[in-house]
Amino acid sequence: MKNIVLIYVIILSIYMSYACIGKIEKKQPEKVKMENQKQEIAIFGAGCFWCVEAVFQNLKGVIKVESGYSGGKIKNPTYSEVCTGQTGHAEVAKITFNPDIVSFETLLSVFFKTHDPTTLNYQGNDHGTQYRSSIFYTSEYQKETAERIIKELNIEKAYPKPIITEVTRFDVFYKAEDYHQNYYNQNKGESYCQYVIQPKVDKFKKVFKEYLK
Image (tube, rainbow, N blue to C red):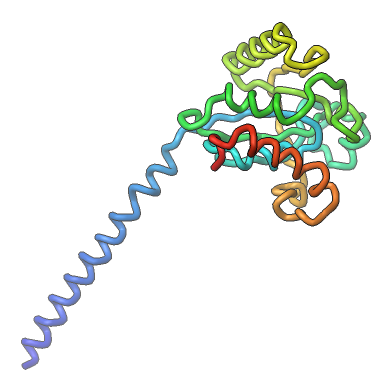
């Protein structure tokens, strides 16, 4: 009897081992796929970074969006320092995207259609150099593409006034304070979210509905 019980225990142990291995093997491909997906970075300034973040979070192929500061002259600036307009930084969104799913050209199309690139240092009621329209390119390809599209839009007179978007080589990105991250989704009830950010998100979803996540 003892031998029969022992054999049963051994068989059960082997079965459970194979079952566990099977479960692990089924999970591995998904993990590998996530680790191996292509990633590139785009840095855009288009007024308040809450708005830019909220728009690009909905774009298919975008992996992550972070609000922060770029283009300034001091290290590790705080929000209150940037708000003075004296640091030289722009409020920007750092967009991590998969170029196999969404192209840099599509990102630029969203960028130009969800803010006014003809106004110098302001968007709506947000005034100051920190709200300037800006593209911080991370490669020569991004630089050439941004400059080409701006030229084409100006030739086509897509806007009543010429585009004044700054195209600058990316240097450093400083991530903004935690309470600025994912701001719209966590504060939809606030008036700024309802009357400023929501219309931008609605416009984006209407114009780019085929690109939504």
